[in-house]
Image (cartoon, rainbow over all chains, first blue to last red):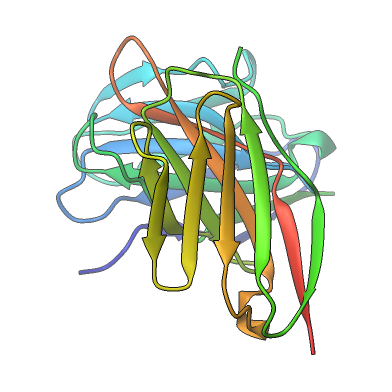
Length: 114
Length: 114
């Protein structure tokens, strides 16, 4: 049973480009969380999605960031017009239902903005 | 608001016990977690404790919870070099749509010396 998969593992973008980060949850999991880890900091919640729905995006920056979790395919975190401050590790986690007390984390995507 | 604090660094000798401390502020948290992060990797759930428990033991790991002081600790017995990593405590802060948003501490870097 494959775990949570994220790709790419490393992504380099120049300022002003777009970054697309993908997360495939564990089989049977329909709930996805995205977290961001800035250098030397802990993880901060960004957004919580269920299939085709954004449930809570209270941690998402108001501009340039968006997330989706379509009926088919992985969850996508999209960052438009990246800036150096977006450089971070982005982790997704999945769970089988909303009240499940464990989240399973992927290996993360490390975004570097030049 | 939610805030989780940890000391940043701990150094121990191999074979000694390690104690990593954490304070949190959200008294409504139902679960509290300890995660381990090795360099360049994602988060691995080590253990968790339900808020109505004072202690939980799992092999070399002992978790103590003091709800009155909102203090959580992780004790690692017979610490090995493979335990060198960053350790995060986390609490669950649910939200109106369901789901279990995690609030992480800043992380404690454990260094095990020979």
